[in-house]
Length: 80
Image (cartoon, rainbow, N blue to C red):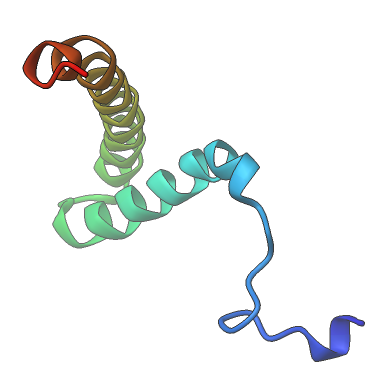
């Protein structure tokens, strides 16, 4: 019953596929941000692509840092 679907009140259950939305979301954020900041259209494409790679790399590193903190540092700080 797609006619009764309310996107903000009844969101789709896509929690298992959050990683699939990382690239389009980071590309959208980078494109909009660099559209305001870039001096020329040629520079906009290059800078938006580079910023997209930066965002994705930063998310991977933050995930790895959170994993290391939870698995290795936190048990040393607060043992059971």
